[in-house]
Length: 276
Image 1 (cartoon, rainbow, N blue to C red):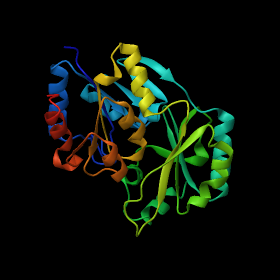
Image 2 (cartoon, helix red, strand yellow):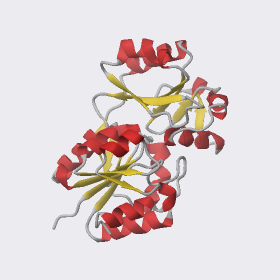
Image 3 (cartoon, one colour):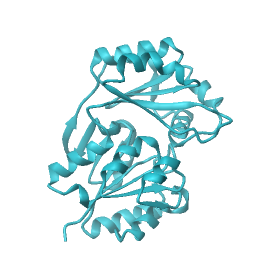
Image 4 (cartoon, one colour):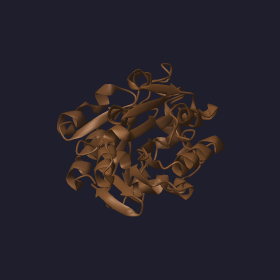
């Protein structure tokens, strides 16, 4: 029997948000699944630079930048940065409304200089907020926006306090870019955060592109995620899994809810699905 293709989000799914160290149980399950003939891919909003510390664990490829950059083994099969003029317009409109931004190239990330103060005051949050808070706290090479050098951008991460701050950018760009906004999990700290993702790709179409490249039916795929930027993947894969620590909407749409990432949830999900 042909093995399945397994797709794993990172923050809040494979690892605690912002961490590059999966639980030992998750690594054991992944290796057992690969030994059984399955192939395991990362499927993440992180750009290649920010996901690269996890590649030492021997994944079969990855969907990075929320679907904008895809590899199978050592081969790049999809590479689509933002149009430079559209990226510039997005930043102009967002900054004009006081929206905090980070921009992600393939090999670098730049953030607004006062983003750290904004996050420090934002209180609790979802896995994406926690990822950025930890990334800034640990100085994971997020450079000041003033040092952005013009290299191609794949994704813009946005954080603000009010939905109306996003409206001018929505009016100008929503026909070409999805404004993927995460659920607010702590009403006492209603920080909105999300991403501008090119409508030419998403995590679900990333799954389809790898399936087409490898000649594997989409029905033979499994996807694990926790946040709203995993929704397209969850809706595409043959079998979908949401972590217990994940978005309420994602749990409703997933075929299975497994324990939280910190409770060996990934390994338990693999066991329940007979992947290892």
